[in-house]
Picture 1: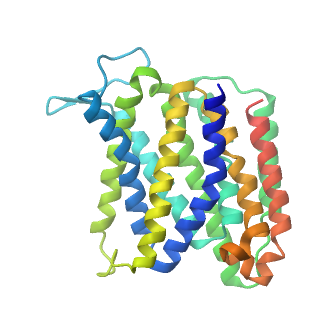
Picture 2: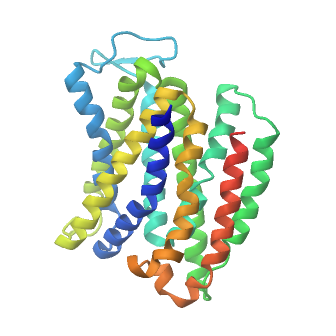
Length: 311
């Protein structure tokens, strides 16, 4: 049990630092797509390696919780796993764009609403009951967002702030859909099969970013940019695998995410305490730095809503 407690908590503490690496990489490369592609492919590697070691897809037979599959060219493809892969890809894209465009002290705490969405998805799609605490948590979320509403003056900053919140909420929805699917269909002996299809499919979608029409010099970054992107993207892939694995082993997505969402508080405190050391933009900008205490209080309210959601 100590292992299950420790891993999500460590991931939550590491997440803001990894997000800072990604943000620095995306700022240096002026392009979020390289980070997305590396993270997407990196998230699939553990499942592919485990599949090779264990043989096949690591699935000897269908368990009661396994989603039905569709035969495609003689291979049983679970469509729900592919749907979860698409949800993860959409969430990952929205998450990285929120980190690239906005402040970490806003983007990461807002993504913490994922835990509330997991409980709501479990209620609507899996028939799992939701108590009064879920609705109390739902009231705290807009209160938390209220304290995060402040931004530096100017129409451009106002638009950037609104876009960051919208992208972070979209990311939370995509990740919540993935975690709900893993809890329902990816536990026990189904973990490798479900994870292999889910993350291989999102890796294919991520590789498609390379062929997107646009700038001809895409992915031709400097060595410094690649250093930040590789460190941040591969670390994020490790965090993703760890959280999915713990959810699959425990079957308690909400419980795991309450530990993982220590990132909510840490991400708001990091720029305030270590912002200048890390050269975080929100700490270097005097107008933004004045807003950090209010954002920290908003993060505390968001954390309170997370705690209520799993009581």
